[in-house]
Amino acid sequence: MRAPYVIHRYPVHLIDVIRAVDGRRITIRPTLPQDRELQKEYFRSLSAESRHSRFMTGLKELPDAVAEQFTSIDYRGHLALLAEVFDGGHETMIGEARYVVDAGDRELCEFAVSVADGFRRCGLGSALLSRLEHEAAASGISLMSAQTLVTNRAMLGLAVRAGYRVIANRCDASQTNLEKKLATPTAPLLAQTQTA
Image 1: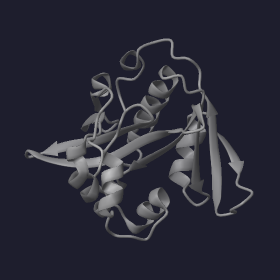
Image 2 (image 1 turned 120 degrees about the horizontal axis):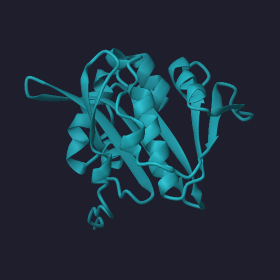
Image 3 (image 1 turned 135 degrees about the horizontal axis):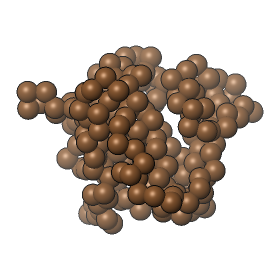
Image 4 (image 1 turned 30 degrees about the vertical axis):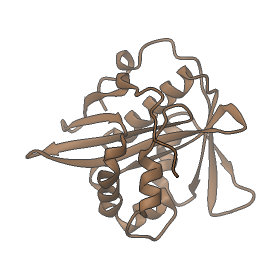
């Protein structure tokens, strides 16, 4: 029998509405279990290149088990945000970002960010990543890291602009490692970033 899903604390302070640089209104909020179909639709909407860059897979559909893992977040060791727009009452997910705390060292976490093809270069990736960093630092995490493909220019550009070190992966030449030491936050997140 599966253990019941429990949210330790839903981070309502991370719910925000921002304006992209082109004026579009975007809602950023923590992910919930009922977002499973939204997550699957998002995965389906990505180009094959974007799916490969973020998920390192050629699958066209997000498996149910992975969709459940992506939406059953405890907000203790795993934080996940999604970005969405509303058009004619229809909700469309356009981005996601998450980190998972290292089981062996609570001061380390691995993160990932993804933005829909039609919403690139509007500041959404930076907005999502800055929120992850702020929440991670506030939770006592001191180092954020990620692995990405060396061909993933969008992710590499975002990481370099955000101050990440790019480190060669000695085990796999097709991937590279990203690392950033976090400073303790000194101001509320919403005071720092109002526009994507």
